Amino acid sequence: MNQEVTINATAAARLKAQGEFICEHCGACCTGCTPIQLCETDLKRWVDYFEKSLKVIIRRHVKVYKEGRQQKIAIKKDLPCKFYIPGKGCRIYEARPEVCRTFPFLSGESMDSETFIVHESCLGALKVYNRMIQTGEINSTEEKS
Image (cartoon, rainbow, N blue to C red; front, side, top):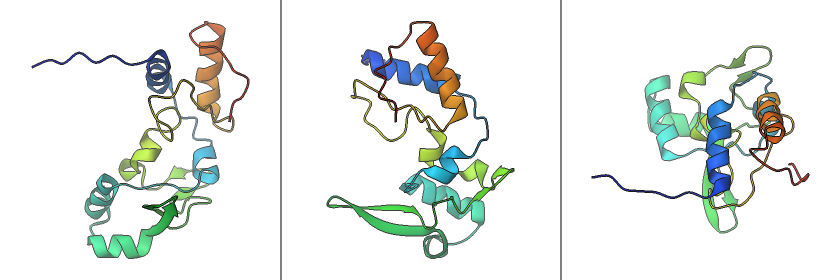
């Protein structure tokens, strides 16, 4: 069975931007984003990747923190990310967290938002953003974060 889904123009622009994004391996996301959130899927992926038990993975690599009233989990050392090697990149790239996989345009904010954040320190994101501005696909609010 097929289901028709409607998304707003901003969500469509974010999806397009993410699809066009090419990582420049500048390390901006690995050295400037905190906390680097984790989800259950990440933990399951790490159990297979590291070939360790969930208990060991949590003890070695995970911290618990509060965001408002919610308890969340993140990479234990995140500035810079403990898995980032300057000049080489992510040493667990195949097993990187979902938030890293969806950075820079699909992580961090609701798809219902009428705006999206452009991380100015991310060279690849800036290239996509500037091209989309030049072609008129998106409008700048001049309040980039």
